[in-house]
Length: 371
Ligand code: SAH
Image (cartoon, rainbow, N blue to C red):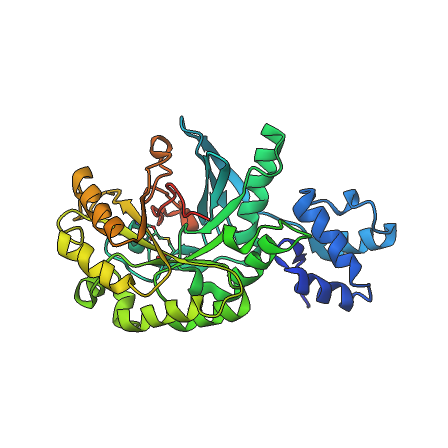
C-alpha cells in the first residue's frame, strides 16, 4: 500500500522553487510572490490566513503543503540583550540560533549542519562529528522564528539587519540547502537583506567558494586561524586538502571583478602561545597583503576537555596593533551572551536522538562579522 504523501514544507522553497511548485499546480507565478510575502514578511504559517488566495487553492494547499519551522524548545536572554533559541529538528536533534543586538544593527547567527565533519582542534562542535545536514526549511526557519518573536515582543519587524552563517556546521558542505535559504534572505518578497548583510563563514572549501561566487555572491568570511600551512594543518585539518595558497587564490577570485566594493573577513581565533605570537602577526600581514581584507580576532572560548587557553588581552592588543600598522582593518570580537552560554564556542546543540544525548556543541556567536 502506498504511504500517504508527505506534505511539502513551503518554508524552505526559495523564489524559484516556489514558482516551480505553483507551476506544477497549474497556478500563475504571482502566487509564489504572494505566498512568499505571507510566509516570510507576515510570518504566517496557516494557509487559512493567506486571504488573497482563493478558497479552493487554500484548501488544496492545506492538504498537500505546510509551513513548518523547527519547534522552539528553549529561549534565553542575556543581560547584554543577546538571545538564544534552542530549536528542535525532525529526528530529535536540536540546534541553536543566537541574536546579537548592537548599536544600529542586530545580527542573527544561524547553524547549517547538526554537528560538523571538519574536526577543527579548537572547536567544540568538532567533538560531535557530523550528525546530518540541515534542510533549507530548518536553516531559514531559524530566521523565521527569531524575526517573528522579536517582532511580537518589540514591535520591530526589522530587528534582524544582518545574518551570519556561523553557527554549527560548515555551510559550504551543505551547499544545496544553504543556497535556497540565502536566496530567501536576499529576496525582496521575503527578507530583502542586501548581500553585504548576509555573511557565509567557511573553513575554506575551495571549490564551493567558486560555486558560491557564481550562484549567490554574499559576503564571505574565512576561518583562517593560522598564517602558515604547518600550523593550519593542525588547527583546521581541512587545510591538508585545500592548503593556504589555494585558499588565498580562491579568496582573490571571490572578490575579483565585482560590481560593488567588497572585502573578505578573516576570522582568527586567539589561542595562547599557539598562533598569537608577533611572528604569526607578521606572517598574517604578508598573507593578506594583496587582498581587500578585514580581520576579526576572536578570543578563544574554552570548553571542557580543550587543551587551549585564551590569549591574554595584551597579547591580543599587540597582535591587533601589528595588523593595524600594516593597514589591515582589524577588530577584536567582544564576547557576548556568555551568561546564557551563547558566546563563541558555548552554543550547545543538544541531541536526544534514541534517548541519548550526543550533543554538546558549538560555536560562536559573539560580536558578529561586520557589514
Ligand atoms: N565551519 C564554518 C562556519 C562555522 S563559524 C567556519 O569554520 O567558518 C566558526 C567560527 O566559530 C570560527 O571562525 C571560530 O572563530 C569560531 N569558534 C569555534 N570554536 C570557538 C571557540 N572555542 N572559541 C572561539 N571561537 C570559536
